[in-house]
Image (cartoon, rainbow over all chains, first blue to last red; front, side, top):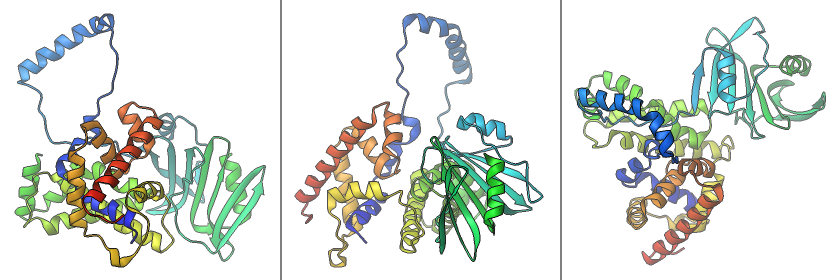
Length: 194
Length: 186
């Protein structure tokens, strides 16, 4: 193990107080308030103060509020609003509809099509050019193919494609197909997304 | 539910302990794991293993701070999984940058004969962290314990990324000097 890795691991056992001190909730947003803007809030503040006096104070508990990197949504439109960009996807894929809709870190949308509990297609789109697939498997067959002006990297084996990724000027895309598909089917899927 | 009540459930071997732990700390632990693994499934696996380790370790442990107790378990599990995935060439490169930064502190070689006692090193890091002002320490912990990106650390402090980079660079230099004074050969 490299010494830097040992140092990183040794960091794990630092004092609890230092870890607690740095939780997200301890960071306050710095804002500059003018007196006029504070006056605007004074009726609301008065209500809060009265409520606090009646209830006997604010209950501090030990809940740590850490920004969740993943948020689930019921509707694609909600996820698109959260991430700030649209995701064009087919309503159905091989007889399955999309179900799990997740926004990761407020900048990646991931939608999963399932047959029962089994994922059959995962479509991911994110801001920027980083790989958004979340797939770190090794594949023996890696190809770069140009299609409609986009350079698509496909990964798979035995002539089946399990992962396809490409980028545009703003976004990064990934298609994960657990059962694999051929290039013709991939092109058809690509057309539905773009 | 308060932490001490959850810990009592563990001690009573009441499986509701896992439920309440998950309710309260799933996001926290998932965030720690995700910052290391950048994979939802692997992060979930780590979090689930954290609950298992918590169940196996309480009793005899009775942590005063349940959050950090769980967080440390998750961090360890995630780093171990990251190491395993990297060895199998399945891991991503998301820790390359913080590791490179830390190699400025301690060097890069992977000489087994110079294995560093982690407990001793942790104690040393604790003493070093005490010397820092609060904000610098918080930034250092966010970067190298929580493994937030520099961008996220900058956002938390409402600072520019460059300012955070400089702050962290200077702190790493100080850590290096501190370790040398403590007798480490770097």
